[in-house]
Image 1 (cartoon, rainbow, N blue to C red):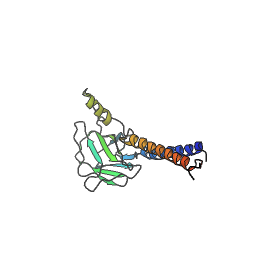
Image 2 (cartoon, helix red, strand yellow; image 1 turned 90 degrees about the vertical axis):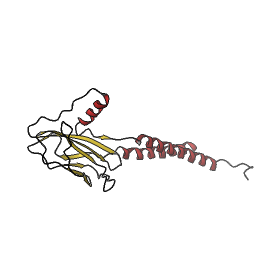
Image 3 (cartoon, rainbow, N blue to C red; image 1 turned 45 degrees about the horizontal axis):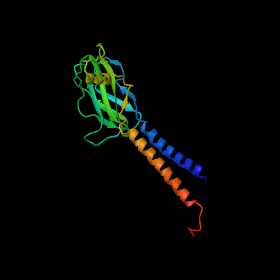
Image 4 (cartoon, rainbow, N blue to C red; image 1 turned 45 degrees about the vertical axis):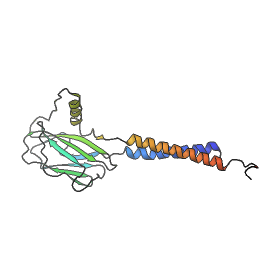
Length: 197
């Protein structure tokens, strides 16, 4: 095999290694459906909120599921009662039956099957109340919080911290292996001289 073909084969291996790592990192689970649904108007307060995701969620342990669910009204009161349960790809949280007629937001965060946390917001309304509006106070930190909590449920956010570094490290490792293989093959295939005998 010529040195050029050897180098090309090594680089191909490095590219495949990078792609094999990069593709799973971008395949986060997504919210498929919820009860109540995004923007749904209910005649009466629901007894629970339930969300179904595209993959099985990670559960950290029996005391800490890794899932956070808040159902808040405009005053910031959380109407979730009891623990949040995660079974397979479904998250459920019981709600206080005394929820008044008002606009609400389900604010959720779970751990995706690939280990990355994902989050989102699902607005809904009970009775003939206006949908919940989030006012801005003008401070940058509050504006970022407002933007995150007023986003529709389809704007799910995944924490990519460490993903790019991992891909870069795998790519550098693959390139280093390709160079080592190339150098080893060059050494083994070098012409023998009388000094080597």
